[in-house]
Image 1 (tube, helix red, strand yellow):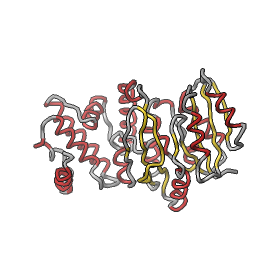
Image 2: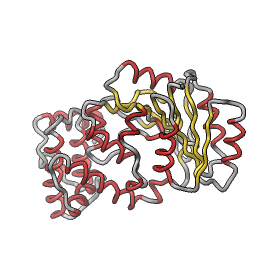
Image 3: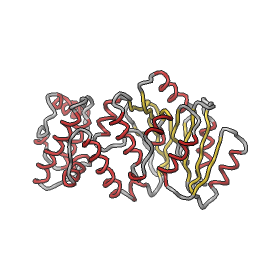
Length: 321
């Protein structure tokens, strides 16, 4: 049996999937199977996959009616024979050492639950996305409704995806929701990224973020409600809206600013009951919200203890604030 199963859902990607498959087949680590599920494509995606499968026995492919990403991934997990799984999108490109570097990391430290990496974007945008190499930092970002690891960079144990399947309830943010629930259910399993670009991530003219921003925010509120409920904190619809105003650094009316401070204080205190915000993720969100509302005097309105002042001084010195 292969040690690693690579999960690649595909839908109408005839222009890109060949390059994606070739980048997987060119990995320095080769004890893997590539599982591809064509999700009812109406172009030549399935034909292209079939042609590659004829030349490399590591490729196993399936097809279905259009059922969206969450169900596709769960179906692929059911077919996985490896002890580990890696995510891969059908329009991205793996760097040659991606699987080798990530699998080595997981094997060397069994306490790591999910490992990602940095990504280089290409297409409509060219920049490097730096995900965090520290578990505490990742968890603080998750507590702020952030996707802590780029989904197509994930590698983890197959059993973890079997025990916690993806849910279409969180469509548009299934990765963000999955990580939040994984973090809550597995406090001792680390979530982190290798600080190295191991994936090239394609940016399309019309991304999901741009097209479905409002629906993504509504789903994020749902995740945040469930997340903080685990800490014994109930957040109303109004409080969740205020929470989102903070994390997205929106300008608000003065009364809403005061109420947002109360809500964010409540969230921060809940997070710190079980761990510390060692890398100032909460602090940074609050500072950016204050600056968006031209209220630098409110930096300390949410009590982040004495370490907050060092954060402010540090970011000022870097010129980030």
